[in-house]
Image (cartoon, rainbow, N blue to C red; front, top):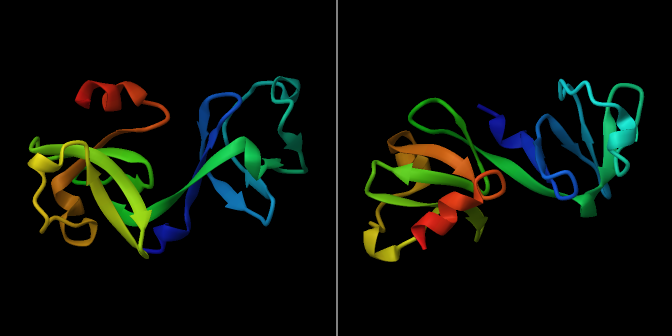
Length: 138
């Protein structure tokens, strides 16, 4: 699949998700955003020949988990999932693996994992664009 090399970035200043992200040591670049806004409205982004770049401190980077949900949507770190209506939570990376972190561990079955069960979950948002989904569960 090789989608695991895809990244997206949450722009902390403008509060928008940026797609088609490439990473450097200290900078991140975006391509093909489809925005018609003038660059002066993005003071923390520097225009380049065919892209925009900014310092990594201005964004939160999320990597693709190289999996798709039951509707065929790519799964990224920090996505919020609904597991067949039984459990909701966040997609995370840790201990060298992708995993589901449920909002309520009482609803969770320890046999569920992203590798085998991603086709049973639906991505319903992410923690940046949809913080209300987290608050609803608490």
